[in-house]
Length: 382
Ligand code: FES
Ligand SMILES: [Fe+2]
Image 1 (cartoon, rainbow, N blue to C red):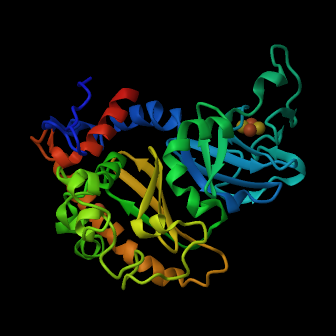
Image 2 (image 1 turned 180 degrees about the vertical axis):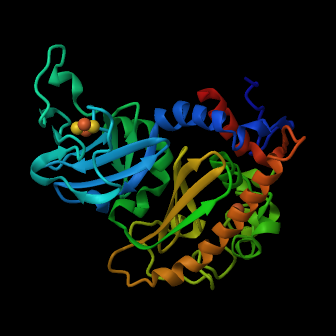
């Protein structure tokens, strides 16, 4: 393990250049499996929207990080999650997608083993009792489950709502004024990237690429056009007061209100926002390794990151707004869609280069302090 990256004093930045992760870690099947087990199956990962599990008896099944997961809302209204795998001989229990748990029972389609919604094995179909078999030892294997911001998170290492909040309270606190749990999806898109999941976060964690890759975004958020992410990334930031030009403060360009094609808000300002929240332009909350949400004046956008296989990653983007705001979701989505497509292309080019001999590792520059932190986070878990 490398030493923790040394930070500059007085501003956000690395003190000296450090090596990036070895190129062999991007898209290698053995490394991918290692990361799924040591990172993705050891913490909270975004699983689905809460609407999919709103009513008692609702269930949602899907693949994530090599797992097959079944989440449901039980008759008492509690969320539960299990590995969607029968304890008899391992058949998938529920088909992928949304459905219902009828009469609080989950039955395996293969030999009819039946489980209660709390995971207890209730019956073994036609299979007779046999010596050495105890039903109590063959219930469904649970996952931790929690809800935040209208999304359901699961954790293969276990835990409940309190554990989720204890771990991620400070990360999500900046978005509290957006009341994301009360927002509704107005648009959703899926983007598949031919690139490792780590490349998504590396790209997310720097803006050196912004002037070249994102001309429209750099015009809307002028500080991005300088290759930095926020005010404190500038060594001279203390000299720039809150009334300095937007290129120095990180606010949107003068006259712009939100991340839209023309910069105008698509709907009314969200009721919980302070003047400062509204003026900031963008406010982020990140839940590594699977999720971020960004709040703007009139809406929020959540992105779920899903590693599909070595070197392939899916992004599920959801635009969120008050249910009664009357926002045209497709029009709202146009701006960020282009930004995400630009980032996806950058990640794919990065992936192609990383897999080309004889490249072994790159180097992180001063502005890439957040990538250094991400790499430390990854290394600490492996
Ligand atoms: S595998 Fe499920 S009942 Fe046999
Ligand atoms: Fe970008």
